[in-house]
Image (tube, rainbow, N blue to C red; front, side, top):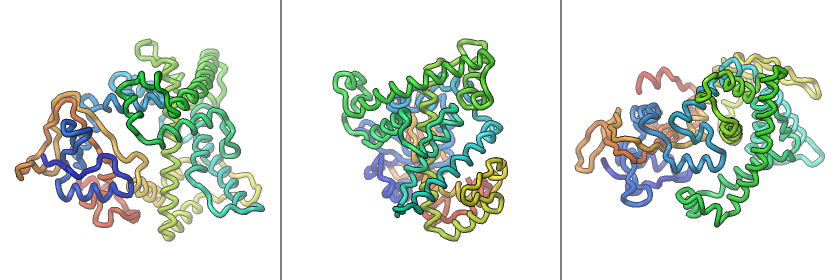
Length: 421
């Protein structure tokens, strides 16, 4: 298998699409890259059959312990960091909370917060000192915190109106500092040697520690109060339909203690909900708005489609929050725009797995070997890392066409994708 000597493992978004394209043209869709030195030889693949095999065989490929530790240090051992039986047990307990019927029940909350955000924006651009620009990522993040607070735990952040809630501020400070600082040598060192954070704490570790005190303090109160009401039968409708309420009921309904998750696991899921649901959503929506601004014809078509099923209120008129979820879900152009935006700029650009045993990864396309010959399938050794670049695959011109880097595939069809891959 050929080695991409010029590949950068974590390129910037402005360079990654060109780098992936260059590597595919030079080395094929599956090639070897170096991690930390010559002896850390990894595999990177954009082959659809290989990607599907790796991501659907978690008994052979799981997140490396380094990734698990890095994530769990920040948000606990929830779904994003756990693996194996622990992950399977968490998934089983959490599945009822994410049923389609429950998601539909949250639709009024989504509409309520969308209208509240709209009113705030109108006030900012039409006030005595009109704002010339709006930071969409920041504002949408405030709205998503409100939505997750209400749907997840019936907890009121009111972040759209004021950014003064202690839990909200703890989350924002922790994520902004821990995520935006980058992975310097000191941060990487603490993954291998956790005791460094005890004897040599940094600003980031201190912020995370203080934030955890606030978050887990409030989280424990929410969990204990919800458990008490459920066990006493005094839980109201809002709390019983929240993700936390459904999660606790699902957990308590399992009579086998070995199949239950602990209160600490539940609080780790709270952290995971906010981490996975807030900034990822705000980033995806902000990029979608930018792409629509660059294609005014799409923006107009999408607005017309939405206005065909929903009329926003005038002035101080009370909005209608009863729009059925299925009406929104069945808007064809909205569906196409959303898929195209997520294809072009996915909030999570890549994933990494480690092989738990020697294996052969099947491939759809031939793999170039160092001697110039080609073969199908990739031999992988136990302990070897495999990179799965979703962003690179989403922008692969051999899959999506020569204009794959442009926001234009609003006629994207899953049928066409399935027939060719």
